[in-house]
Image (cartoon, rainbow, N blue to C red; front, side, top):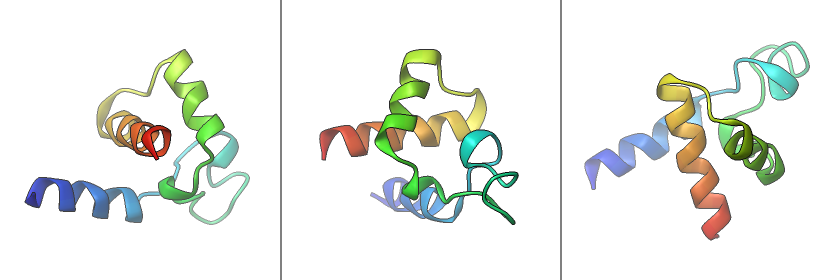
Length: 68
């Protein structure tokens, strides 16, 4: 349960660091992960999530938004 809480907190405070929703288009930090549209997350699902922790968080968020 504690791990789930920490993961949700991390999703809440992490911003998209690159791309269409990154800081170049949404200064100064980019869009918070939890505000990313499902369609964008679905694109990552089809193309492949980034490696590392960011990819893990995006995949978790994808499943949360897909499952409602």
